[in-house]
Each structure stands twice: as C-alpha cells, then as structure tokens.
Image 1 (cartoon, rainbow, N blue to C red):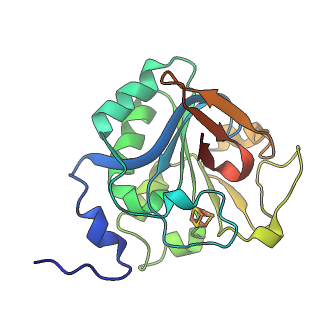
Image 2: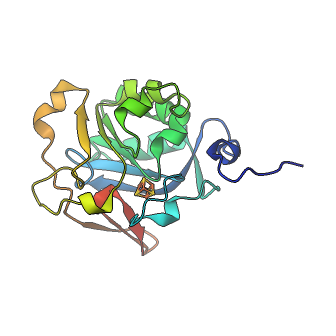
Image 3: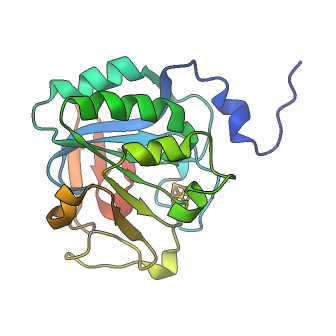
Length: 208
Ligand code: SF4
C-alpha cells in the first residue's frame, strides 16, 4: 500500500495519466491575462500557501478536472477569438511536461503562449526546478514570475503586473509593444452552465 508523503506534488502528479492535465478552470477570450484576447488555463496544484492567496482552492494537487492535451488544444483553437493562451494557477510549472505538448500544438497554429509562475526565472532554470521546466520556458513567448507577496500589491489600471516583485520576461520580441493589458481590471465570464468565473485581479480565478 502506498503511503502518502506530507508534501510531495510528484506523488499526486503520478495520478495524472500521461498526456493529460489536471486543471482548475478555463475561459476563452480573456483580455486581462496577457496581450490581446486569450484562452486562460488555470492549473490545479500549488505548494506555496502564500498568505492572502486569492485562490486557495488551487492548492490541492488532487485530481480536480482531467483533460487531455489533445482535447484542450482543440478547445482553444475552436474559438477564433483566442490569439494566445495563458497558463495560470495554481502553479503551471508542476505540470510542465503536458504543458510543453499543449504549447507546441497551439503555437503550431499561430497562437502565442504565456505563463504566470510563483517561481523566479532563475529557480526555473536551476536543477531544482520541476521536471521539464526548461522545455516549457523554451516554448513561452512571455513569462511573469515571482512569488505572491500581499504587501507588494500594485493597484494601478496601468500596470500589467499586480505585484512590485513580479517581472515580465519577453522571450518573443514581436510582443515587445504588446505589454499593454491592465492587471487591475476584472472580467466576469458567464459559462454555458450558468456558473461564473471572475478573473483579472492578480491573474487568478474565482468561481461563483
Ligand atoms: S503561488 Fe499563487 S496560487 Fe500559489 S499560493 Fe501563492 S498566490 Fe496562491
């Protein structure tokens, strides 16, 4: 019988079948999570437990909603308003292997790919980074990094980041002049089943 370690995301990540992602949420056509109109994928699971986290239901690594990379790519590409995809969380880099494959599929169709992370870029480039982090970095057009620190919050309609310690890393120079979204705006998406997703503030998600 398996004994579950107290904190080991890899233990729960083993429950995700290869080629699948464990997600917390998804929306199309968001304009507050990166340049232009974008699909946003919130990944389930985060170890940090930051005080003041806007999204504590994203912390558990237990299975929430499984979707195959194939299905998710089709969903993203079926909405012609999606010019790009943003990975948020939770912590996207714990599911880097499947996100690498998703990023390759949507980029092949002409979309750009961006990710938020609670790691710093230096941590993601270190040997201690989650598996295949460097491959995911190689697929990204933009990365917004750094841990959430509530006292460093920026409340400005002109800032693309919501914290003073966050950095925007532009890996694709074509997006240099498109860092124009405002992180302090809020969007409410009403889904087909009547549920709502409120997003924008801190790049996070709330279901209502
Ligand atoms: S990194 Fe983000 S999702 Fe994780 S605990 Fe901190 S604020 Fe919450």
